[in-house]
Length: 92
Image (cartoon, rainbow, N blue to C red; front, side, top):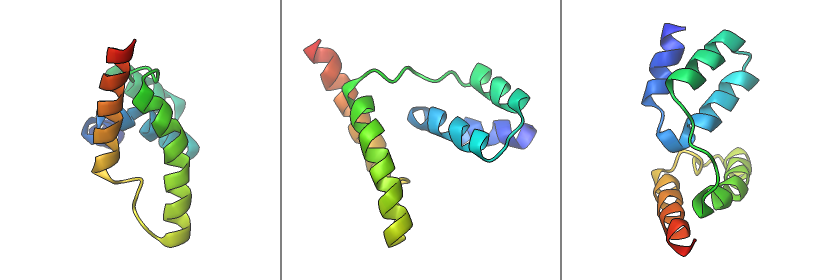
């Protein structure tokens, strides 16, 4: 569990939910997931950037699988997501 928590500490905050889901799919013990969720709370996905990311990330994963690229790991996506979330807050 120590290695799991150390890995989660290095994950960008915008990607914590995705990281927990990846560990869940990989068969990580539920107590690890519960401890990770407790130590690294996940922000709610309610901003404009979160909505765009919910649509774009599966597309990026598909392109990565077919073309052998690394769009999912691109740092620009997290920056754009954050900017869109800020813009969305200003509009509401």
